[in-house]
Length: 136
Image (tube, rainbow, N blue to C red; front, side):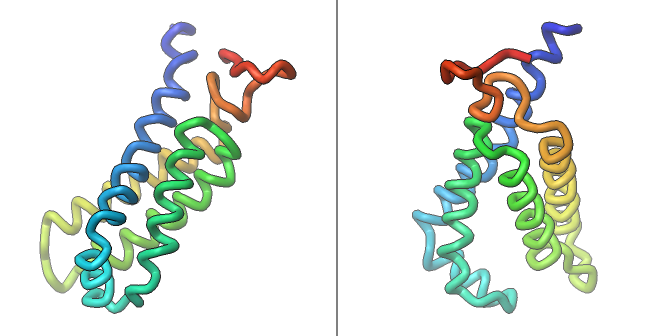
C-alpha cells in the first residue's frame, strides 16, 4: 500500500493539472467562440485572457508541483466560480449542465485536498537542497 500512496499524490496532481492545461489551450485556439459564449452568459468577454493565463500557467504549476497549495486554491476558486456561472442553470433543466456543475465541484474538492496536503512526492515543492524532487 505504501508503494501506491507514494504515487497517488503526484498522479492525482498530474490528472488535475491536465484538465486546466487542455482547457486553456483549447480556449487559446478558440478565443472568439469562447469570448462569445462568455458574453452570452453575462460575463465580460475580455476575461478570456486572464482565464487562459490562469488555466495554462496554473495548470503547469500544478503539474510540476510548484507553489501547489496556492495554485490549487486559485484554481479551485476559479473552477467553482466557473461552475456557478456557466453550468448551474436550474431553470433550464439541462441534465448535462448539472453534471458539468457537479464535476466542477468535484474538481474543486480534489484541489482542496492539494491545498490541505501539499503537492506530494516528486514535486518542485518537495525537492531537496540539491534540487532533486523527493519521493514521499
